[in-house]
Length: 453
Image (cartoon, rainbow, N blue to C red; front, top):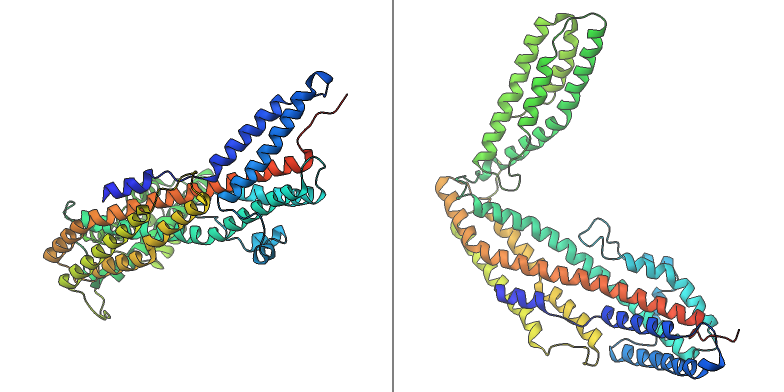
């Protein structure tokens, strides 16, 4: 399977950024060769360069059309791009996602678009108006593509985040035997979860309360009280040593041991503070504040069995679901690989840009992330819904370990496709900006033909 993943990863699809970069390079060459002033001695050179510029414009429009881009607009595209506000309203946000950094050029395009449209409407004598308008239509078709692809790209990003979380659970389950850990029985899962939430609450607030106590004690020392604050420092150090470091994804016997250890420490705080109160009776109110808070947050360390479980799963049923998942992943990988069985796409092909974008879309569609995530989550939840003992835990961990390589390869494939998708969107947006900026220069400055001094 690794061979297929590398094949997808190494596939070099033609992209618009390469074409746009070549265009800019040629425009820069012609600009550098153009004299700053028109003289009798360089008239032939200026005329020849102007002919080259016209040919470059004509060839560019032809290549854009050959790539599959339209140089005219349909009513639905026009309707969604009447204003920048309307474009933004129709564009999903990439913020706070795995693709948050891949659309800076999209917003640079939107910043340029009003000025570009205004310059095209005014036109320039040197450049045929019909060519400039065709260029604008091509840009607006590209913008439309960038807008509509934001939805599937964002969804792909969200699905990959979800897949990553379930992948972590599979990895942790597969690692239990190597760590000599046992999966916690499902009957205590709710109790473990409540304890972890309580511990997280204590570890967030109790250090702040101890800081308050220390500040207060430093204040009373200044007015003459001889009190010891070492206990509060010791409690802070111990809390730091017991920082929540258990696997919160897959509960095991190590999770239970951590909760029990934390519970013993937490309960010992009460005895320690009561002793401190006797020894420092003048400022006992400092300990009382902490003790009062602890009494309101005291349910830590006791793991109880649930009596409301609707059903339990068996190892045999779990094994069947993991086999079903494996078969589904193999079929999905075959579908993705079949995308490459079509002819190789190159810049020599007609509609090369459209074909490249369709190939990327097919990769995402054929991964069927929603389906695989649903099956994977079902497998993990069923594996954790067994009333585990040492034997069943070892069997489940071994079963997951057997399936893990297939899941791991699928996860790698998904990451490769995602990276190609992310880069593709970034490159397409950057290319669109380059073409937009080039068209703006053309519509405002024409062919930059020098004038007589």
